[in-house]
Image (cartoon, rainbow, N blue to C red; front, side, top):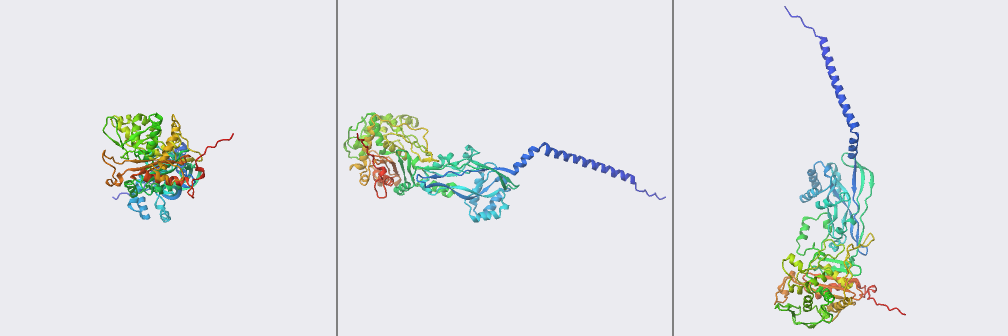
Length: 628
């Protein structure tokens, strides 16, 4: 019998649908409650947090680096300025794939793999978060155009206009003014992170380094609104930076050029000082280099050429060159002897061509091996007699000699504002005991009396010694800055003046130094014969290699770089000192024959007018007697 056909249960289906609708409605209601609760939490409970976060994503504070102060010579000639330049910068936090973007830059700009290596090296240097890092400077118009066309493919990479340090006179002031360079990681750790925000360069050497605080200025800020890709839409608030202070140097660019010309391409150093003020008029160290190479980053090839050069162009001979001063220190030794009372102007010794200590066989030779007979102090300075000064040094002893020479600035830094100056070396008993673990020998005192032995001095120290004699012992530290924003530099630690028991001894040594140049028997009489003003000077020769006891100096047996150094110091006009000069010519051999003519050319350039006559303002001062 067939089964009955079961009809569809509509009531059951309706119950199922109703239950599903209820479950769905409950689920939607619960989800809606969760959504509302979440919205309430975000928009009410955490309103302050997200509002601040949103604002920070939209508004950024960007530093505005200050314009670096300018540097001029004493006549207003611009020595260091700021030149506008377009640079390529990268903000790592805004890039999507840094390596890929750098490679794309190399491709579109037609650069080399070495350039890419430089880019990566600069990106690895220390920096602050969200700080743009310059990776390429001085972009050409074509390079700027190519980057602009492909800007959408280079997020975080921008072309910015900024000022870059420039030295119009190039190598002429490299050793005095110095240069700026990129801030490295050690410097980044000690610099003020606020004041140096946005700044990528800092003074590395010379005036740029010493006066960094004055030249840098104070950073400014601006609040900017940006879009999601970090592009600036508008400036909301701005605080202008304070530019660095301008500095006027005491150096005269014309005299500097004349001094370089006088040196004639030879290795050496020249320092010219105005005795009455301590202002450095010229400061030459040859050979030199172009400081512009270091500003935006010197290439490996160029730096290797400078670093490995046998002539050492990076070496500042004026401040760091240490040389035995030779006979140039004899006037200072003579002052020590007079003030200590061990000799008088009339004291004489007999010179057979050598000097012997009592009970010693060793002979300390005079440069004139035939001897000069009876010699007094005037003749000893005029003829640069070594025998006389051996005897004088022996009478003084190392302790008094060290004390007096230290008062002239030897063995210490003498400059007021010259970065990297070496103190040189003024040896003593204690120094030798500590450094050599030996006692001091009498013979070492003798050779110290003629500026040989352990003693080492810089050309700047020799110029300062000469200025002290011209000033009759008044200490004024040599300095490069004439004014900073119109104010002269101050000496925080002035040196004590050299007060002699008999002040007239200054005039006596002055007169003796004039005999060196203007007496027919003086060692530099050829220079004096052509001078229209009186020069007080002293020649010197510094040994590079030692000569044995019974041998003579033979230049033919020595290579050019092992021959004696030539030195000469002097001031003029002798009756009214306006300039004190020290000259050192490496391996020049003759102080009187090589260095003295250089000194005279520098003095002529400063003291003479276009007609070759002494300028009226530099004429010797004549004391006026008041009439009753």
